[in-house]
Length: 221
Ligand SMILES: [Mg+2]
Ligand SMILES: [Zn+2]
Image (cartoon, rainbow, N blue to C red):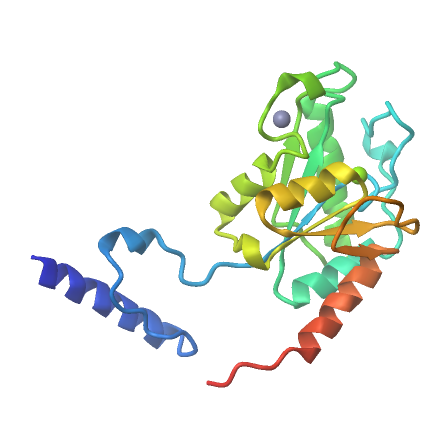
């Protein structure tokens, strides 16, 4: 019986190799590992306010599309990331919902508008995760908790070790750390927040990623 299971798995893997000739043949995996994703994708998790759109003053929330102002060079930055093979996922705290200042329906309309702006510029987000809770709700999703990143990784089959979290606040940096991704801060004033990487804009970070990619040794087949 075990032999036939192994044979089945081996055939499945060989078949996989035929479909994707650059993948190594994987041996000795149990049936359980059929759940294993042989080609996990790397992602860039993006904070929303202050990274994709202009942040409103403290205690103000983007409640309508007219209050959503996309930042310059966001679309070209995302296009570079997409072309490098990164899956683009927004992870955003929206406690204005818990505070009764906006509804989830309002937020969805804002996100539809954001998607339409980006699509018009030729880039597409894979997914948007938001936390509607307040600070005291003790949920697992509000950054700095890693819940949204971990949920996206599970839903989309993402390789966290090869992924980045990009944000403009300490809670973004911490959420990235808590999820096991590399944290990147976008800021013209590095301040005193400890982070691995600081860039003045999303486009600067995207260009740096592209440079890094070019300098890496290419795999031989
Ligand atoms: Mg932010
Ligand atoms: Zn939450």
